[in-house]
Structure formats: structure tokens, C-alpha cells
Image (cartoon, rainbow, N blue to C red; front, side, top):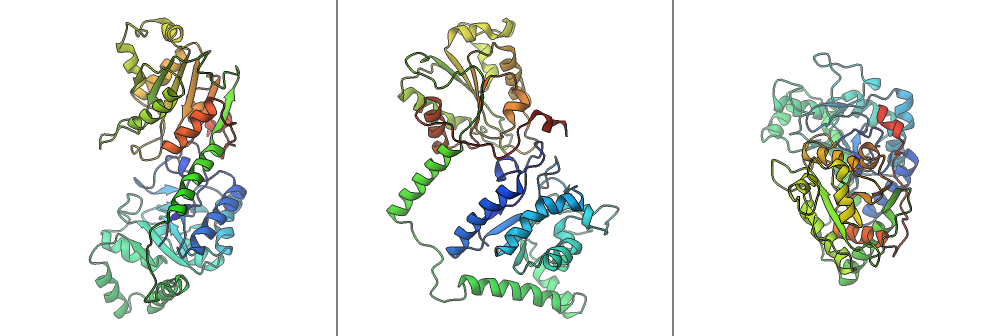
Amino acid sequence: MGPASRADLGLNPLNPIVNVRGISDDPANAIRLLREQIRGLQEHGVAATIKHFPGDGVDYRDQHLLTSCNSLSREKWLRYHGRVFQALINSGVEVIMPGHISLPAYQSERINGFPPPATLSKELLTDLLKGRMSFRGVIVSDALTMGGFRGWYPTQLESEIQAFVAGTDVMLWPSHAYLDELERRITSGQIPVERLDDAVSRIWALKGRLGILQDDRPLFRTLTGEEAAFAGSTARNVCEQAVTLVRDRRQMLPLSPARQNKVLLVGVAPISNKGGDGGLSKLGHFRSLLEARGVFLPFLFFPLFSMWITPTTLPTRTTAGGSRSTQEYDRIIFIVIRTPHNPFGPLQLYDLEAQSAWAVNAMPKEKVIVVSLGSPYIGNEYFERVDTCINAYSNDKAMHEAVVRALLGDIPFNGISPVALDKEIFSL
């Protein structure tokens, strides 16, 4: 199965999964962009996979941890996720991955009083997806190790068998006993052989369309120099078109190294107990780009509250409003990195990172710039009184270069927010 394209819609800013991993909250935009992505993959012999049917992005919880829920009514589901999945099915997408997500509006079945996730729901996979929506491709499960899938049946093996019965054709990470038990139940008549025929015929047809059954078909090849250069230039172009100026009320941009060359750069990101620094170390590249343009950055702090331990140059905790910081520097740039599963959990700021937001809001705003290299909601959620906010969506070198070029006026801010950022959206 090929790379997965997210047909999920970011309808809930508090959803910890979709966020920057989704393409939009607008079905029309999602369809337009995903169709092209799928076409590009499948024209080059790769089976594109769209996920997570029936659609993530409504719940505020994470299906990796528990079974989440798409709580839309039938009418709204057909206008949002249903519209996207149906359009992509009609366009010929080869593979669909169901999520460990329920859709109560289409489910009457209950297991211990709860609607099961799509991975275990015949109503969703066989009746709705393969039936009413006429999907003729392959259904491949999401990881069977996830919390949203586990615990619905007395054993993990039984859950895997029931996922097959429900309509899942290919399992992602089943137990070693799965195939033997599946064969036993089919040969004993407990599972109709027609269910096996359905799965095999879909998989076999997919392999035929992709040419996988040809003996001389190469699986991989090395990119040519021209192709590698094209990939790099495309990444740069995409990033430069993506950087979004959320607001600049005081017209602080562009920055001029001749007038604002002393800048404090502050990284704000959670540190994971499982290792990793939340992407903070990558900001050394961002810093070097500004310094190469004549901007002097004497400090790089992670996180903001380490500022308070340098009283010779920065304010103490008791200094009102952080006034010495704003006097000491021409600009203070706060770069916030908050992305799904980095680390696991809600995408809100907490602990030292939350105190960073506290400090920003205590400061005079005439020199503060907030840049989000992750969640597009950060600027409005925590920094609505900050006059200059930028959304840049990813923490990598190509995006760093695009943000610095936009900050210094080399390129305009071309980006249009892929999701609604209205304050009222946080009243969910």
C-alpha cells in the first residue's frame, strides 16, 4: 500500500490528530488538493491510501489512545467527510484505511453499549463503504496495536478476526496466530468463504492494476540528479507559498537588519519523556539564517522561562511586564512548535510552555512577533493580543528559509490559512 493521504477534516481545533496533518477544514479544498496528490501517486505506480474513514477531526480525543467518535449527524457527515471520501472514491483511489473511529449516525450495532470503531463495524465497512459508496478498492486497517482498536473483544486475536468479518481486507500488524485462525474459521464454515473471495479479489485486482504481478517490475529506483533538484525546488516553492501572515496590526514587518538587528529568539516546545526536544534543536538553523543576514541574535532560549535565570540581561520573574526585555532588544521572536504526537497528548501548551504564553502576554506587544511552526491555532488560542503572528506549519529547513525570507521582505506572505481561525471556533 502506498503513502496515506489524509481525507480527515480539521473541524475541531482541539483535535490532537488532524491539525497540521490534515489538508483543510473545507471539503471542496480537500477534494481539489487530494485528487491531485492521489493522481500523482497512482500515475507513478503507487496505490494511494486515504484515511481515516469515516473521518477524523471532529472529536477532541486521539484514536491512538481510545476509540474516538465522529459525532456528526448523517446530514452533516454527507456534507463534510462523506463528501470528501465519495469524491475520492469516484476519482479512483485504490485504498482506504478506516480509523478506530465510530460514526454513531450510521451505526445501530453496540458492543457492551458502545458503537464499535469503523475497523470493527460491518455497518460502516461493508454496508456503507463497499455498499452504498461503491468502493471497489482495498480496505487496509490502521495499526491494530492502537488503543482505539484493542479491548473490544476478549482477546486481540478475536478482534483481528472480527475486523476481517466486518470488511477489512488487509491487516496492519496482526498477531502471528491471525492467518492460521482465519483459515480454520473459513474451512469450518464459521466465516463465509465469500468474505475471503471479496478480500482476495480486491487485493489481486489492485496488484494487477499496479503491475506488481509482472516479474520484471522494479520496486525502487534512485532519483536522478534532475529529479532530486526538482524535489528540492518544489519544497522551497511550496513553503514560500504556504507562510501565512495571520496579522500585523502595527505594520512591524518586514524586519530591517539595519534598524532591528538585535533580536531575542525564544523557542517554545514540549520536551517528551520518551526522548527528543520537541524540535527545538532545529531552530539553530533558523537562527543561522537570520545571523547570515546581519541580524544579531545573542541568545537562543529553550523554553522562555530560562529567560528568567539571566537577570543581568533579562527581567526577573518579578519585573513587571518584561519591560527590560523589550528595552534590550529591537524585536523578540517567539517560535512555538506544537505538532501531533510530539509528544503524545493534547496540542495545548502546558507546564513551562504554558508559562511562556503567560510571559508573552505580560510583555508590551510593540516588539513581539509569534511564529507557529506547527498548529495554526496557537496564535489565536494563546496570543490574540500579540499584534504580529505568523503561521508556517512545519519545522524544517525549507520552511525556516521561507519564513526568514518573508520576515525580511524578500518574498510576500502568500499563504492563505487552510482552516478557519475565528476566535468563536474555540467555543466548541
